[in-house]
Image 1: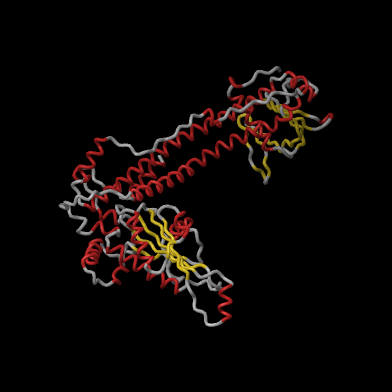
Image 2: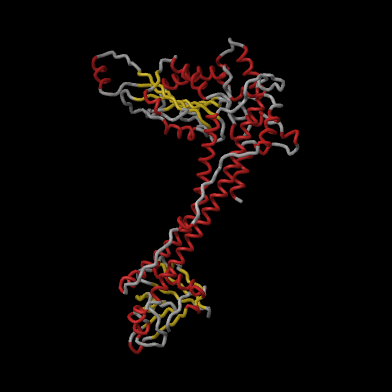
Length: 532
């Protein structure tokens, strides 16, 4: 199934399908694979640090306070997404990072964007506290809008006092809002479901300029702030690569600290998977919805064509049953459930791993449970949607058949609008005329009459008149091809002939009427009984 294939591909991307089948290998999670997943690549192979070198570098940073700050620039967990020069290639994550600005209450002329990958087991409050300490000591203040913003986001502002050299410049500055620096941060998960901290540095207000180039001063200010934040995050061990350092890979670690994922990270992952599931459901449900809409539109054409007959002869209009009312709609419980025995077994297996491997195992298990939850949810919702669409289409067809039967079985319509009255002859029966109008049969002007039993085309006038009788039992197929830009109605007959009808108007409605009556003849039990 397409859903299963999609979920398997996602699981493979997250490294969830990398485990061996034997029990001994399934009890361990390779932290290196977690950091080397394709969706988590941090640099080109030519300039990326190996994992062992990265672990050694992080250990040296944590043990040597005099370590050169410039080495942080090579740390692959931290990236500048907006280059200063326009010719530099843009990272793939840039567009995804820009979408997070929808939660920012301010607009800036230009945003300089940075991204850092952090450990999923560190509390959000601890990360925010460290972040606020770095930004506040740089002259910023917490914005008044920070209290009303979404969880995981922070906004800091700093009003820049620009020096004035003349009274004219002072007067010009008074005409525009004060120049304000903004630092907007958002802690969430990337498309690869890793925890990321994105920092946006921008400027608003001030005198307008015509230049569209990047502001070097803004980039320099943002780089300095990000370098301080990056150094602090690495020094306290919040970077994702910390999980692969010797301090976290010691299986004999006797620390009693509880190892668990941050609840905010778990909530962010759940929301990310829910968003993907909704997008998949929309994509899969769209063809089904289009099919139901096509069927309902066809019935609407039939009803609108028969509307004058219902009004003229005061016939009761058929009522349509609500498809949503007839279809049971159940709320899916997609909560993660697992037996207590499985949880106990998992806990005993995890306890034998190193701290870094335990965190990696928890992350992989979270991804796997969310992927399974999505797969089951999509399957259940899709089955429910298919049942609902089938029910809607069935109701629509039944409504059209009931409307046609109501007209055909009406004694009033039979007496006043019969085929015998229209033709002045009983040679072709006496059924109720459902539609009467002008048409072209091939290249011959004709009068088209449609009853439940047959299609009659009266061609010519006086002594040159002729009649083409097409009983529905002799029709194999009713189609609506486009010929020279015009929609025509094509009737394929049992004899092998094809009759093409060209109408000046109402082509769609007449076609749907013919198609519906033809389908009713293919189902004898559903056909109404009429007097002939």
